[in-house]
Length: 385
Image (cartoon, rainbow, N blue to C red; front, side):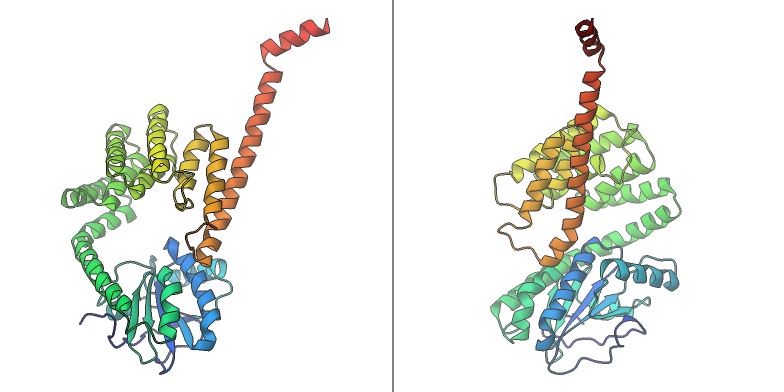
């Protein structure tokens, strides 16, 4: 049976509670947020901080948050528990809500699968009468939760339209996920065994089935260039990804391609330098044309990646300028949850400090080279005779 707005909330069936008292049942008169997350999920860190704030803000209005870790990537429950403990201590030391761990898959079967919720983080809001009021991304909670708490949400046209759109969107994604699952299973088994040839075969099978799937396309490039170091086969695939990203005029695709060329986690020493920087220049210019510096669009997502290109290409002043614009956009007209700002700010500030230090070192090196250049030494010699 499908799980949607107005459905009776399923039970919470878990045996292991990492934080807070074990949860017995939904109590009449209270509103609950049931949040699915994992330690490997980047956006989940910002979502956890946001939930801490929401729990504190609305605790007197009857809100209770329950986090459910049901997707840990670990070889055993013991390893998963160690990961979870370390993650919570580092990312969320001021946690003020319950956290459950479910290694059995039972919670996903009860909650996520019937609602077509294929990704995380995913939030389920349970209303005061024990029925589902909202299913979606936690970034929407700042707007939705006050309306659930005051009782105006579920009867509104806005809520009904949002749930109808979610079901249509999520149903399509779920069908696609069903097609991708056997390919992903084969791919991740090969990755675990470090069998790059088998992994490549799985990805090429996926691309033949879904040629416009960015995840398959990225995995194709990553395997050839960063795992197999096969420049002969990898560079044509990289060129095609860049062309397709630009032809689509898609910021997502262009950022993904730029990440393969300039992402700090990758070793690019074996790349043909001239072509790498030429592709980086094209992608960066198109991204900046989509979201110009003088426009009001948010810069914190795309500008750090473009700044990396400019920094690596030697234009450190431009890189610093773009990072400053990214920081400034966190306070721009588009409302950004405080938790997301707190998540983004440290990395942006650290990168900015690193770039400034690099610029200072480059300036000093330039002065030293001039001081000890043969021409300068010759001129100094003539002056001193």
